[in-house]
Amino acid sequence: MENGNCICTSLRRAARFSSELYDDALAPSGLKVTMYRLLKQIRDREFESLTELADHLDLERSTLGRNIKVLERRGLVARHQGADERAMNVELTQSGEDALAEAEPLWFAAQKEMRSRLDDSVDDLLRLLDQIEA
Amino acid sequence: MENGNCICTSLRRAARFSSELYDDALAPSGLKVTMYRLLKQIRDREFESLTELADHLDLERSTLGRNIKVLERRGLVARHQGADERAMNVELTQSGEDALAEAEPLWFAAQKEMRSRLDDSVDDLLRLLDQIEA
DNA sequence: GCTAGTCGCGGGTATATACCCACAATATGG
DNA sequence: CCATATTGTGGGTATATACCCGCGACTAGC
Image 1 (cartoon, each protein chain N blue to C red):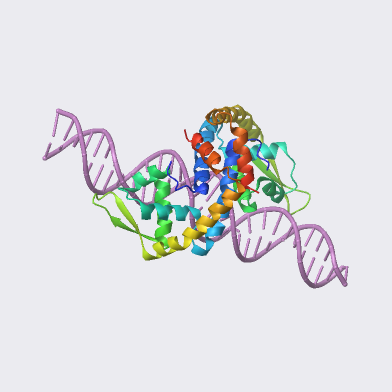
Image 2 (image 1 turned 90 degrees about the vertical axis):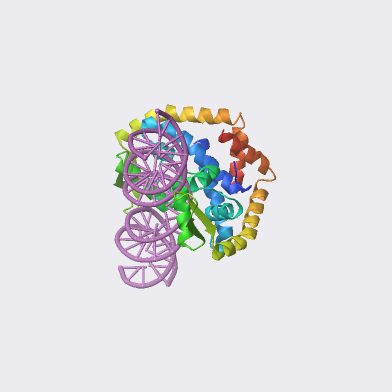
């Protein structure tokens, strides 16, 4: 509970805690919450390039590239050359689809636990978090 | 703004944004917000061991050890053997004191910027973040 | 159509973070 | 006092994250 009233420190700490909560919930699927999130985006959306996806997620390109490489090493996604020879297409493998399908109800349970901790103030929290990114 | 409504993802994103804000503000001091926070704790509190400090900060022991090693490499803290030959004492060097003194007003400015973004809902946010760690 | 700029990406480096395991020092139970 | 448990750290490994730089691919101005 000690944070010297530093808002940033409190946010970082809450992010650590909640990551642990979600990661634990997702563990049976072999995914962590970052991987889950990324797989879901790759499955459900069309992107021209990693750059575009990175912008969408507010992540650095190089960070996204490394995160995707983790998924690739685990055989959850595969990369192909896109139309443009610079751009990279990424698609879920069957393993990736399976892991994601297994993870979805687990994610939902974590989300529910989080909601209960927040005592139905989830929308307030999300609104405040959005304000930070102004 | 896209997060699939995942509370954890929103928290992680907000932590990234706010870290960037504080890190930028603190840049002239050569510190990042994690280092600032850690230096302040080391200066202002007495700890028997790294383990105790790690508990206090809700950080893994090994994480704290590595974070402190960064401060040590930069000459901001020095380690000595404690009474117990297992335990490690850490103290700020003069460089550490100076950097921290330089950083304090910069931290305050970041904090103020954050408060303004949150439109005086800071206490609400901190209360919600605490609830997550229940 | 060549030159110059822009775009997409990876790699190097650094920090922050966690987990597990091993080792050394201390405390504890008989 | 010795065997055992506990405590305090560090190192190995992995992920998440960012910054900077360079290279190869495309595009636009002329």
